Image (cartoon, rainbow, N blue to C red; front, side):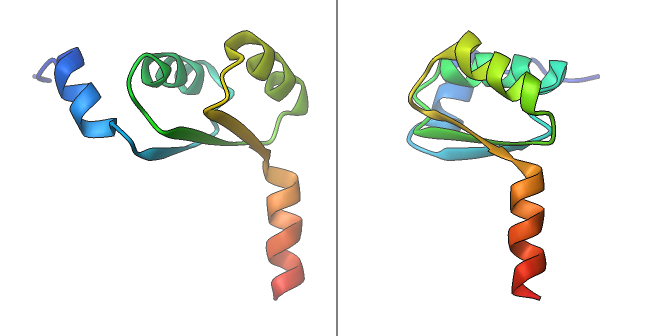
Amino acid sequence: MMKKISKYQINNQFSNKTVLITGGTGSLGQALTKRLLNTKVKAIRIFSRNENKQVEMESKFNDKRLRIVLLKILILFFMLLL
């Protein structure tokens, strides 16, 4: 059985931290982002492959702490390093 986590515990855990969410434009990623934006999180970085969902999510949340990185660009960058 899972233990319920209070808002106080979440605030303390993520306060002034940067959180990375992979696949963050999906339904679970969006729910987690919404919850984290209601805390004192310093920044949220999301890796996503879907450009359309990326644009939708940026306009939906409109928060300066949120940055979405297109995964295709990141993969290309790492391939160039090899």
